[in-house]
Image (cartoon, rainbow, N blue to C red; front, side, top):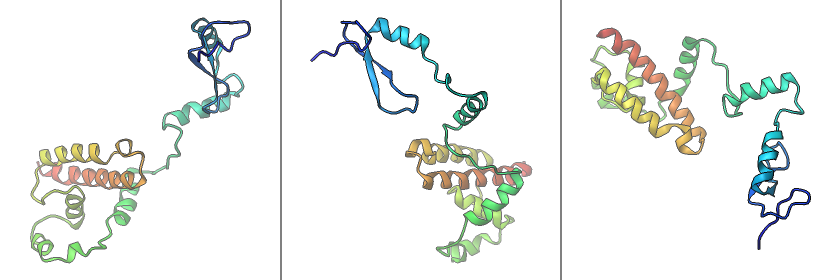
Length: 172
């Protein structure tokens, strides 16, 4: 069955979709090549919007129209997230292997950062950077259907990387 162009008085085959509404719905009409070109030239997504609505849309488009949170200063954000993100629900930090590492010169924050990045405590800056890139690729929400679980894991990894970069980077 061939579908005829939905343009008035046209008998060509309609092969190209033209949206009926601006709300990104799946409603569309089919047009031929000549009429889809005319439609596209006249189409203006912002025609019924005020200047403020257009500005809001453009700003929102920078984050794929998803809500974002204001983190404030990076130091404040780091402290709040770090203190809440690494709860020791499995008592990992009370184990014998963890007690061995207490003899090192690392702070508790640095040890937590190494653990979050799945690294040994004696890892060098180059290893940390390489692991960070690997984990970002693995846990990025875009790679995991936007899952909140992966987004939170990525935040922890980013915070851990920032911490290690500050402390390990200073030692160089």
